[in-house]
Image 1 (cartoon, rainbow, N blue to C red):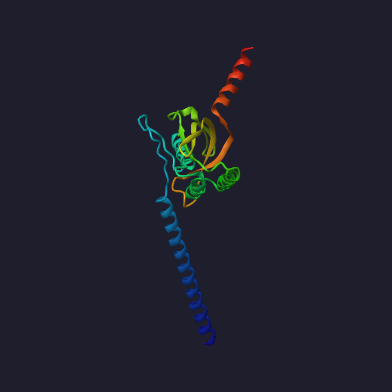
Image 2: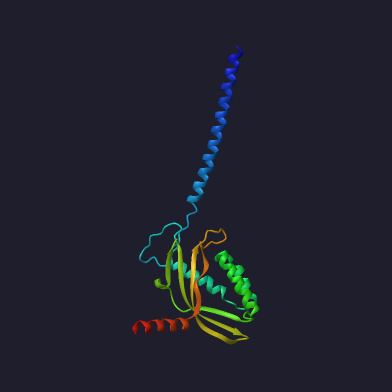
Length: 214
């Protein structure tokens, strides 16, 4: 009789163990279903500005034109010192910190500190790009990374007097960015090469052309 009771007790315990395991598995399956569902509803697609010729869009894939206009937007705003560089530059770095990589943010802060020490912030600044978008301005580097060529003018004033009015050539790198604070899905990651004055670049290209012709 005792053996029968022990057998029944062991069977009941085993059944309860199986029920608990089943409930745990069902809970894990439910959580996994929620994760899959949420990911299916968080697909990001970057749509190029010109769809007249159609486009094949893949989730998360950056578009060359979008990367170009993004670089123009961020770089122009970082260099728009409407009041004074002493007030605006540091504020703008903070304001746009989610649209630049942490590494480039550190460079910007170091650049701001250097200009402050050298007395180059007591002025207003306006940066304007000199041309519309062209495909040759954007070079895909693979891995959703782009090199963006910008030809701009920089005009700086002190008390309304123009003290600098030069053309500048920039080569900026745009990379994908998945930080939650970055709603654009891309960020500026610094310079491909050091910025140069446009006339300096023109002289270097002219020298190269003359050397090739000789």
